[in-house]
Image (cartoon, rainbow, N blue to C red; front, side, top):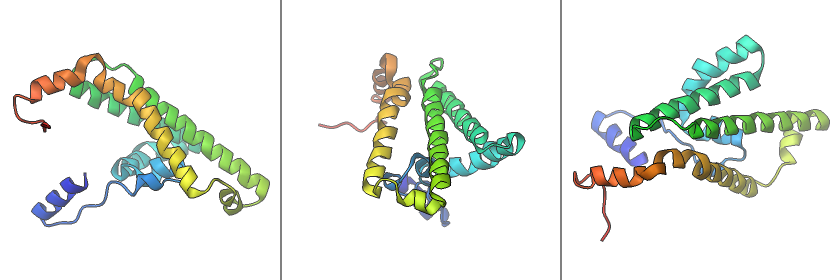
Length: 175
């Protein structure tokens, strides 16, 4: 993505906003999804889904659940387009699981803040950043390989992809 951004930026002569902010340094799932991964999608979903749902129901959890659900459904459409197969719901399950986990994480941090008296003290008592980042990346990768990627590669889609694109010279091959 960075290479593509550099090419587009150089060609058009304008600077593009970065789409990722070192997601491997995420200290929590909320940090990963809200401030480090796919920043354009986060900003769009925040404005179009999260804020209206939060305002309507008076709860950040409702806005977050709706934003993750919409993201899951949008990804299902992309997978449908790429694979020409009906959605399995696994991609939406991936995003629903992450939405539930982000809501649980926020609830836990708010609970700790209430018991300790401040959010800063609650945050300081958490895991060291290296440990937290490893757990976040491990959780995201583990659930992606369990739920997200199989939707695109199950049923021989990877073989079909190579069969269609290899003759066209669109896939890099290794000796």
